[in-house]
Length: 277
Image (cartoon, rainbow, N blue to C red; front, side):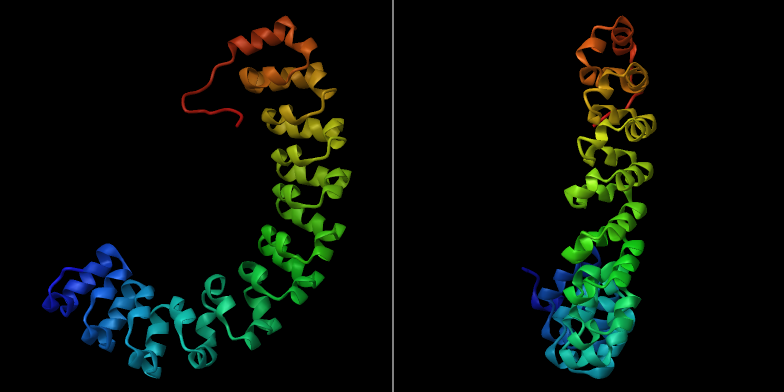
């Protein structure tokens, strides 16, 4: 900010500043540089965000706008509405950033929605997020899109099944009634064993589901029911895996078991290994 006028008007000085310190260096550039299309295009190539400092006359220049978009599509949100409409194809190049800035008529275009659905599902209108086909496609592209579906679809068993099938950890985000659904919980745990912790109390007492979760990751022993934490076979497996960490989750009976005490005392960690978190 203390640079003399001659340096603020020096294209090499300002460009080096952009490269080293970021696009905000353009704020000290001279009016001449902000109105120089050749320099501004070079600056945009270094950082698309420098476009915001371009002069108003350049922002009205069609040729400059098109050249700038060719270099960096992230300038799209900062364009005047007429340019957003004319150059909408550039806006779609970075849909996760620019979809919500598209003119409304394009955000309502199902062809465009399908084109960039995985990254923009949460930005489309609720009426589309209540469409079962769109929802399933969005979940396939990104399982976390389940959380943006309409309330009706978030309570649809087929949609819930699609979500946990794509990513078992999604069990954490489904309505409580589905965490007590044996088929859904079994599928979720088979995909991601740590989702066992989100299962209902009833299903954390389910022998098959609990064994699957614990055999995959002994850390899951802590989430099992009291009955299963008194199971000799499961307890031994859990103690073999992470003895020092799982001992406190054993039943009182098993905590007095000499073999369990021995496993607790003999368990060591590899350097850098944090164990159950």
